[in-house]
Length: 507
Image (cartoon, rainbow, N blue to C red; front, side, top):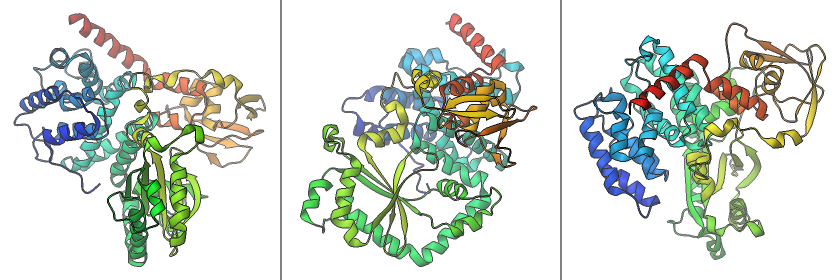
């Protein structure tokens, strides 16, 4: 994260676009840049840099991920309507088309100066802006917002500490879960890592200290193992391994190694605790963690579904031919703590652990920009409220309420699913659950077993539901109830829709 490229040009953006698009509207992208440059002229950011560098970096982020050109144009323009009084969404539509205007609209903050929003508090305006983003059916707006926030976090030193903490907490509560919901794991991880030292400064120091200790004893041997992987999988290296390995290596798209994120380490270590009050530093010392992540991407055209050849099969061929003879072994295949990606736990002869993620090109593209890679039109966060008819046929288990009443619920359901099953208000006010007459407080993600007796404890004074809970819900009924609550913050949403109708009539 420290090598973040701050200086950016429109040439960099166009070069990134050209890597993914044979034909693209270069003139329109340049036009958007020139328009943004003019409208942000003489404006400085809190860091002291020229403002235009911010939209350039946001556009470059999307261009590098292979996003549609309309998204990139919108990224260049995303702050104009919000920051420049004389430019309206109608102007953007006239100059760059309806799709670009819709994307910009999705990421534009509610203007508190305009009625009826002028009667709202600052916090209500922020909440309404979130509702606006959640209610949009334009995934491009979501991706522009995520890239925008990532750049803001990279350059957050221009803000006072209180503002940095506020922005980091909002990112974790709203945008990181939203990235997870659309499956954009890469930016989800990047956002989380940028927030981690702001929200967890003490844990950050502990992890940095532990890594410094690891480097003293193991870094040299870890680097040797990394070099072996690079020798085998990096297409640009001179191959000194058996010639027949070239039959597989030629299908490698890329191989990358990076230091594991602090947020990932923290989640893993905490997940190993039997007691939530266990000291984090002691837990980190106790667990032999993998300090490095490796990602191997395999070309799609090698994979033959008929013969069940997968990217993982290609890796295992290389593993059997070369890695085992070098003292490198696959210990286990595991899922990340958020159950989003599968990885192989690798260990070398000197006890270094690594996480290896093996993906096809298509899987890696999905990792970068989420489920929207499948269809820019049909896969949307808005579709998360669609019921799943197959729920009717799912395997059921029987659980009991605190008064002994039986409930039939999908196998794999969580205590939060059960809370919403009883009543929407119980779910929205969920605090914790008690199972089988014990006093252990169970968190919302805990899975139920057949025969469990469940006592849901609520916070009657506060609505505790948040967007992050979509991760914990396994039944479509509960998902629909939570979405209804999140995306229909009653009065605020009605106010937003009413004001937007008036605005559209004026046009």
